[in-house]
Length: 198
Image 1 (cartoon, rainbow, N blue to C red):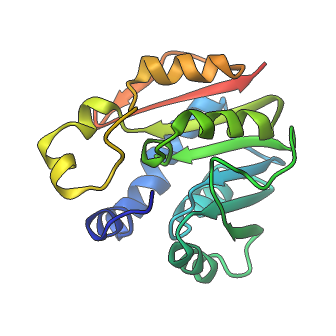
Image 2: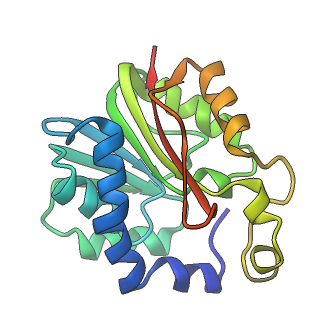
């Protein structure tokens, strides 16, 4: 599901970019047990390309493949990431155009809660991860999506949403096992975690 105008403004601004480069990068580095040096990384839902910058500059990945459902976001990312070790495309997390067991790490900067059939997104992420591969994720729980502010100003699927425990159960169903307790940040607005493919 594409972002509405309010969400695009909230997600595509210097404050959000600074938060990704500093706090979110720090969270993911800690959850990964270090950087992602030498790894082939897939970012699902690239937006305007800030996440790919974080993955390269703050987490040290060798290269990044990114996609987004929104063609206009992919074009913004293409301009931002010109000359970087990034492969960009328009794509759908429920039908990832990557070979099975081909990716070292998948990074999700809060995309899966936008997907109507989020279970299929998890299945696809599990499919493309190699054995021992890592999923790093930041997600918004159902309790936040059900608040007045989210229901009024954002465009999300209303049915079939998840809390952290339900997300963990679905990950495990696809062989993605948590590396520790999920953490809740920003007053419970997001939860973060990491899972490895068995």
